Length: 307
Image (cartoon, rainbow, N blue to C red; front, side):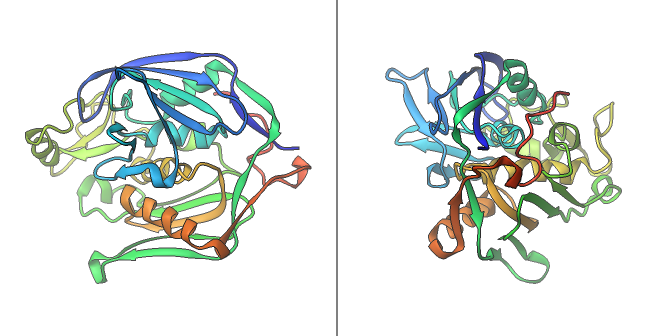
């Protein structure tokens, strides 16, 4: 049997929210089989549980936000990406504010937290959503076109293409493909940071956003170049961060996908539209388990490699 996974021990981090600038404490706790990933707002007078699901996504402007009633958690995608990359099925995320801490702007710190807590194999089968029929969403035409699709694949691979008219981005790779079966998430994807432009940061701050952002947790560019003194972590860090985001957005469906995801200029909103389009097509997917883990796709059966 290919088993579900949680963490062995509790682990904590403290940081600030990218947009709110608020100090926030994050505690990751083990969860029983079939719990899924559950965010818990413990700062509220009565703590509120927010289980992840495509339908729980309430806002996709600048980040993915999930909520139940008035209780919300913003910017969940980097932590969700780490859970996807490490195959974590069940987890409680206790949080003391309305936004997940940005930490260094990538998912590497979350990977470190999860791996330092240890990965626990559980006595229940891992459940996958296997794509049976292609599903696609599109917006715009011509130069404004963007799209995202899922197609059948025995494994999980993602290909993404960005299209930014900016000298610093143009000089790097704008298309990348990552396959969980042949790649290493921790090494190849997790260190890619979020990015933005000084002109946009100034505009966002005037609207009370990006209050916690800076050169220590994002790639920042003016009209010509990257301003971070250390430069880029990957030659194609911009598009790799889009893969990182997509993995987090897609994992909000609540189970790992067996699919090939491909996208052009997609983002949080389109990724959630894609999940909702998928779930609306009962003929396009099924839930599967693997009694013999040798039948599972590469990249899922082996325990997570450390750094």
